[in-house]
Structures are given as structure tokens and as C-alpha cells.
Length: 427
Image 1 (cartoon, rainbow, N blue to C red):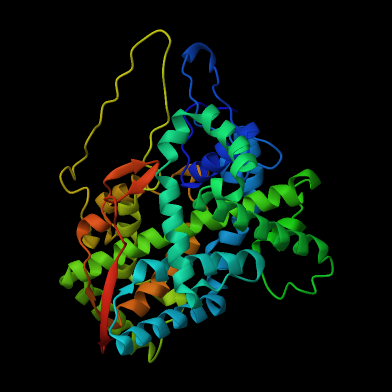
Image 2: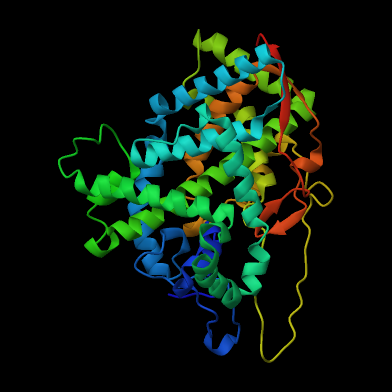
């Protein structure tokens, strides 16, 4: 079933298309005719043997790939990851403690980017890039990825030109002709390829030591052998880690900004955590954190304000003029605010809001990593609110959706969320 109106619930397709347009031009499909409906579009990648699951257009093919990956992102699988996630939370606490001593501004957006990347790398392969111990490198990668996204619109409309330049310019000018963000994507893909090759070669599971996504994909009976080739798993890993890193880090930055921007919200989160710790007589488990209603409401609000995929699929008709009509719901004028109370309770209205929250997609195209992302966000935010932070040269415009670059982008020149860490706050 090849449907013209499928919704992709992650930012993944656009990272994939940008890379494909420049360095994998055979993956592009410039247009498709959808019969009597006469609508055509040029934003979707052709499904090939190496296309990742989230960029797979065909319904049944996508379903096959998605069902093989779903068990690794179930709530149970994520809860079992707690021993692997808590050391990264502790690293963040160490970074905050170091900032107390240094009295220097901390770009906490870099910290969240590093944490998200390390979580996904560790869970995917059993090892990570250890970016939490290399924040300057995390900053460089985050900035290069952001600059890369600025070219999405140009690539989208000038695909043949970029495909030609991507093929010719490196031959003329060498590696320096390749944008830094693309070089990072290629380098990561090559690293992922080496990890995948090692996993495929480890037939006796000597190096496994736990539940890792690509070990599970290698061994699953759900996928036929042609779906387990090194190239396809390499592309799956590239998309999974890049997309998960960007989206989770963005939601964490948005949540942290509004916790500091809205003192009453921060106070309620701290009170909820303090009461829960007293009842538990100690630290809270990951499951306990995910069950906290107000903290969960903050993550819902931050995910909503990340907006997911903001670009509309291109549509045109050869027989009629099409008009895009924007509609507003009951929250008109409140689109860019974070009132956690709108997600609290079990009322019919709250249920409707949650059903209508499309930032992470819906149905079989829903963001596959949402359970892992919410778990990481809950652990990290619970650690962050234990410290007294002040925003440093950071405004709402540094995190607020201003530009549609297929995913939301704040004002140009934003440096992310920067803070001063004054010390630990007794909950």
C-alpha cells in the first residue's frame, strides 16, 4: 500500500534526504503519480535495500522493518536500561558540579546533545563516543548539524544541482569541498559501519554483554537475510542515532529553559520530586520518575514545543489550484507556551490533547524512540533541577520556533541554552 498522505513522525526523513541528495543521489525519487488523485510530490526517498526503516515509503515494507525494531524500544526494554542510563545522569551531575567551581557559563544544550548521543550510541552498539567527557567536540558537532539544516530548503528545491555538486566538487577540491555537517554524517556512518561489521562478525556473542539494538536486529527471525546486510543496518544506525540525538537534546533544552523561565513550574517539579523521595526513603528509580505526573507533563509540553517535523509535504495538482488553509484549535494564541497543567489528569479534554499532539507522529509512523527519549529526559531533568541555575544571555527566542527548516529552528545565531550554575539546591 503506497499512500500519498503518510505522515512521518520523526525528523529522520529529512536528515536522510539531505544526505541522499548530495551523496546518495540514486535514493531520490523526483516525483510520483498517484492515479486519479493527480497529486505529486518530491519529498520522499525511494525505498531501497539500504533505506532505513523510518525513510521506507511502502507501508508493508515499513511495517516489516518497524516490527523488528519495536521490541527494543518498548517500555519494558527501556526500563531495563536504567543501569546504563544512570551513569550518564551522574556525568551530568559532575559537569554541573564542575561549573559551580569554575563560575563559567555552561552551554547546557551541548550537555544534552552529548548525553543523547551517548545514550543512543551505547544502546545501539554497546559503546559510545563519550561526548559527555568531550563537551567541546559535542559543541562542534551540534553547531555543524545546525548549520547543515540551514541548507535543507535549498537542497529540497535544487536536488539535481546538489547531487551534481556532491559528486563533482570533492573530486576537484577534495574533502574541504564537503560541508562540515556532511563530513560529520559520513564519518559517523563509517564508524557505525565498523560497529555493525563487528556485531555481524561476533556470531558467538563474545562482545555482546547485554541487550543492544543491532545485536537484536541481527538475530531477529522477523527480518529476512536481505534486511540484515551490513549496508542496511549501517544506514539504520546512522539515522537512528542522528535523529534521536537532535530531537531528544532539543526537547531537553526547551524543558530546561522553561523550568528556569517559569519559577512556579520549577518549584512544582522540585516539590513533586522531594515528596516522592521522602515516600521512597531515597533515590527514585526510573520507573518511579516516569510515573510522576507533573514531571511527565513537563516532558509532554517540551516535546510539543519541539514540533517534530514542521515542513509540509509538497503537493501540486495539474488540474486545479491548491490553497493551504491553516486552522487553529482552542489554544489559539497559546501555541508557544508551556503550561504543564494542560497535560495533567485523566479528563476527556486532556485525553483529547494527548491524542492530538502530533509533534512525535501518530500511528505506525510515530517516533519509535519516544519511550527511550522520555526516560532519558526524566532522569536528566530530575538531576538538573537539583541545582540552582540561572539563564545566561539566553532568551526565549533562543529556543522558540521561528524558522521552518523541515524541523523547527530558533532565531539565527542562537547559541542554545546557556546557564550559570550557582550550586546544589536542597529539594
